[in-house]
Amino acid sequence: MSLKGKKIMLCVSGGIAVFKAAALTSKLFQEGAEVKVLMTHSASQFVTPLTFQTLSRNDVYQDTFEEKDPASVAHIDLADWADIVLIAPATANMIGKLANGIADDMMSTTLLATQAPIFVAPAMNVHMYEHPAVLRNMSILKEFGCHFLEPGEGLLACGYVGKGRMAEPEDILSTLQTYFNEDTRDLIGKKVLVTAGPTREPVDPVRYFTNYSSGKMGFALAEQAAMRGAEVTLIAGPVHLDTPPRVNRIDVLTAEEMYEAAMSEADRADIIIKAAAVADYRPVVVSKEKVKKSNDSIVIEMERTKDILASIGKKKEHQILIGFAAESEKVEEYAMKKLEKKNLDLVCANNITSEGAGFDKDTNIMTLIRKDGEHIHLPLQSKHDVANKILDEAKRLDLR
Ligand code: CTP
Image (cartoon, rainbow, N blue to C red; front, side, top):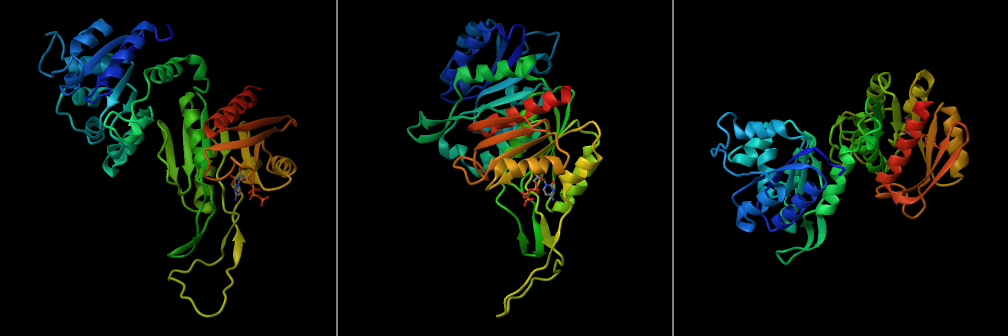
């Protein structure tokens, strides 16, 4: 009964996946949760409210003006009652309404009124899911702090094959169990600072030097740290990634901007993880006008940027400082030199030439090397799993 006593408001919007929401209601109830179901009229075209009423043992809400209790205003009451809100299935329409502040029915009104964390399980046709308007609305909801339960890929009810199938009730249940499990929220009270992505060093108004970093490792670290309850600040170079829920993001472009942001945030952090691939050099002169080509070759003089990690290493007091070493040879030897030179507590070393590791991949292969010389080898696994192992080590070091 891992959800015993948890108050879950289940918002069921209209799509064929409503049948899965019925199974989900049953599972939530069996796990001890108190479930109140809100349905749109379209949802009730697929499965009747009576099914949800029977499975949840509670009244089902549909109409803003059908007040069941004269002593309270139903949509406000429900909004305040919930520990969490789960929109499953979440249609393109309901996602669009919430993203744009539209409140024209019971569900959308209640969603605007609640301050509880919102979990969204989209379900729709693959082309709808990929429509720029839907992608934009989902991105807005992520910025608002909504958690997304990614849809699966496969044969959709509409006949198409692709992404859009609502997450399975078992997976939704397990996400909620993790969310409510105090043991997995072991970074509550900790302030974590993460840097991620590349930096961009301009040559002139149209050209710049950069590197292949995608930011995925740093964003996974920020996301997992926030999931584990930490207060997270993410300093991000230019990347195409959505801000993870409940993460405070500071966007920067150059190594100098990242230096300024990191130095001003470092003092208040407990754990600092520098996953960014900061440019080591930048052009000495940045031309105000576009540099015109000629038939001659050109030489661009480069100067060193400030080493942010080493600067924090010099001034750190209580903070746990973690750096990255992306190498193509003598990985552990070079990584250990960085650990010592930059006064780190832990260095995360990887060989960028290995299959499944390095830039723009969803997986990584790493060796974590601690100051005391301990090596922890992490075989091929997702960047999310690697992130959690790094956070486990950070926590262990912080407790010493
Ligand atoms: N780093 C930093 N500021 C810089 C450069 C790097 O904070 N100006 C940090 C990175 O975020 C990473 C680590 O330092 O955590 C990488 O170390 P670095 O010595 O810069 O490695 P590389 O430049 O990749 O390699 P090398 O020095 O061996 O050329």
